[in-house]
Image 1 (cartoon, chains in turn brown, green):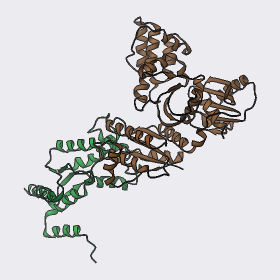
Image 2 (image 1 turned 180 degrees about the vertical axis):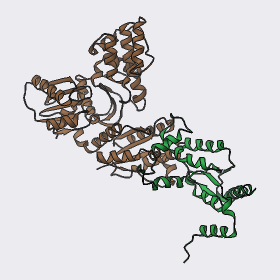
Image 3 (image 1 turned 90 degrees about the horizontal axis):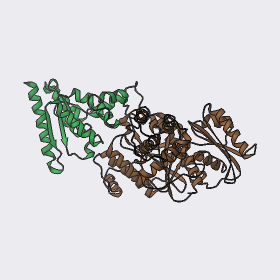
Image 4 (image 1 turned 135 degrees about the horizontal axis):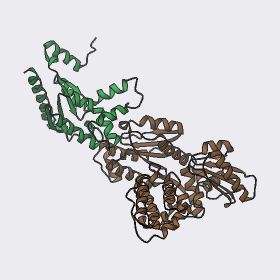
Length: 401
Length: 172
């Protein structure tokens, strides 16, 4: 069991503590609640340098200070209520404090009264991997002949690697996860010109099913794997970095230190900030998804969609086309809409640690990369084979098993 | 065998002296988990409405399995009578838990500026909002400032006088 400190201002009042306990147990995490003398609360606030109006938030800060005295604690889960501004400030302040003092992974979650189990599960599962697989995640090179399979929600990606080089690739839409994986594997092996590999690792939404089908040697969740893949593809193994991973249906924002994720934020709440939104936008402007980014780069006039929503945003896009706005301006507006929503909902909640590495299928759409650069004011790295980050990370990690 | 605590002995004496049991009012205290205020209310011959009792009922309810304090969806929904759906979940949970106390209250004592160790809801917004809801009930309310040190006696006297007045009001 990985020992994780739960630092929160009162999840029991939101009625979700039982769910946290249940998921933690299933994932193999022991949630502990660091204790302290009440007299230490004021001292802890002084140490962190922030004093909140809410006593529970001050106790949260004291818990964060207190957990540093317990060497058995290997990670932290920070929780405050969604839409609580003071809670958000304290949560972020604690995260920064912990990252200054330790290298342990820290995850943040804004709790609501009815959280989706999958949201909590995926976060705690990733936290567990980051704690228990730390030695494996320190791997910076792929060795031998291995295969990484990323069974994503929209597409299945496969790479075959030999001695740190990609020698075969397969990329297919995910329909039946097992069949899609088999077909993508066949394509990757064909390109590599081989029939067998030494080991196979699986990640992505379909990893349980596909992993069992393939008899995989390693099966890991996406956060740790994608960050490893991004570090490898961009050759950024040392120091801080930020990874933006945008796929067909969900997004991840991962802060890394020395090639290992230590904080992350998962999207997936709104389809308007997904690759799927761009697919529909591309269809509306009569372009293939692979051409949407290039089309957006030709935009000369700025046009704003009035909604980020998958329904109303697309409706706004149709209205714009009908009123004579040029296709390229509408394509750029769609890219901006996605980038802005990711910025507002995910990036703003965390800090940006340059360099910023953009991976996942959406990273191939230049218009989105340009919009991120405009919003963030920094250059964004899209490494080669960026859409294969998960598969590359997996092929590398499995070579160390 | 002397099995009665001093408090229960006093209650027994009051009952024997006659009458005060009938004059009981339900007095909501703020902070809602203040043991000291609750005790003062009981000593003053009234029934204290405190959070611990509400949580106790939840925890003892075998039908509910949502540890540690068994806040349920119903509690959160009940809060919607007082707060907007947009409010944070923790605020809704706290207000939902307190709502039955608020609705039962016939009088209240609001202690302000008390240190957190004296009792609080943990959430500053919930604290402020709950005080507002008490005031809106327009029930007899004593608002008293927490006084530490030697002046605590004045505070206790003020509370006890208020409770005594409640008894007289009730008699009338």
